[in-house]
Length: 223
Image (cartoon, rainbow, N blue to C red; front, side, top):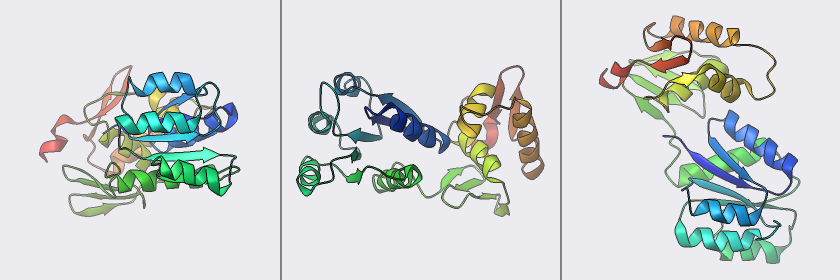
């Protein structure tokens, strides 16, 4: 399942960094810097998690939270520079699920977001597909009852394939999602990492779509 996260934060640098870390962790992220535009978006698309600043232009975060809660019961993580008890209590009164005060550690923010996703049942502790079992928190993999040792990058690629089992993953998507927007290398690193994965797992598990990218073997669901 593609986990969709909406980040609404008027500080462009913070918004960009949070988004990059979430994408690197395997999530699909939409970002908005303006509360009014984000308000329009929540009526168009359902999200599994909302990460929301309080101080926003045009429509503030608390108003956006109230509107979101009328539509969905999915988790909301508030982020703000306003750390006093009154603002925190107001956020929780309007059914926010967690609250982070700036400045904060972005990797820790991602972990808190994942904790909310786990509690809501969206993010499972293990991912199952045929004979494959993946454990995202420990980067563990078991295939046909046997443990498989993967590097973090190999694991992230395999998890991306498994959570998008019916889709072709293009080369550019792999570069962006696994190595990041600012990676200076080329597609050669993808081919080398896929080769290592094939050496550790059944070679036909990952299929090459010539000139486009890769996908999982269709029969994996039946194994």
